[in-house]
Length: 105
Length: 229
Picture 1 (cartoon, chains in turn cyan, brown):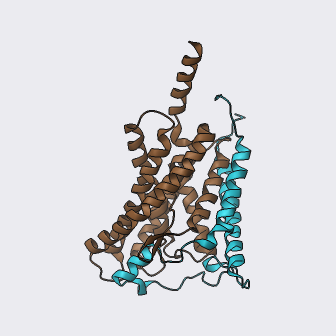
Picture 2 (cartoon, rainbow over the protein chains, first blue to last red):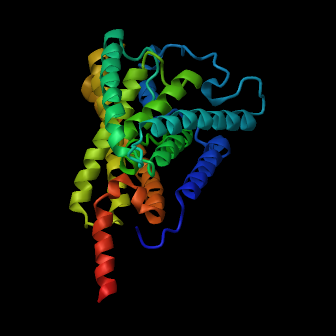
């Protein structure tokens, strides 16, 4: 259909997933720990205190750290990979469910 | 920009939950037209990438950081309805498993990032694409512009919600100016990441990119004409 299709869809997805795993599993350790824009503004303007404790704060991966894993690099990286698996399972399944089938049976 | 529990009062949270539910229901219908056998896997990848990229806070100065929202990025790559679903899945997992973004604020966060960032971003993308040359190469540029604009736009939407149901007496103009100011800086990062991601997919598989539909056909015709001369 298009001239010279260099990369199969499968390869593209595998490369993309590998990159995402590297970002969430490894690079995330080096992410800035400063408050994000909203937190910073809330702090500056004095409404940060209105935030309530999180209802799922006791989750085994709350705040992107695996409970019981002391090494911060490992704990955060594992949490990132777990998140990728969870998001991937749900979204790949949902997209597959909703897609138009090419065989018009 | 994940809103925690407690920032907004119950009526406002409930109202945004209704807006989010209506939006997601519409997206479930609309995504059927965007997804087919070829593009469905890309939707999965986009959600995974957005989750991963949202973990990467980049510094924006003065002790502040920002991270990708990914609404415009997703809308350009897989279409706005599917993008709403992708962002909703990411926000749902973040709130349930990672305690990132409040549970009672889930509707607020879906409204802000799954609807305002996605559809606001997509509208800007269509506008930018209409102005730019009708080439596939314009797609990453239009995507970057739309991503940049989507962040302060979403920040403004939060300021509006807080003026309606915020749990602290902050003047709207002050909050809006501060939110938009910081998030314009964060928007630069959003634009850069979106340019790279959309650019990478557009360079390798433009046929899969939702925002390149129409442009590709024109380009193919151009090539065939040149080849036949």
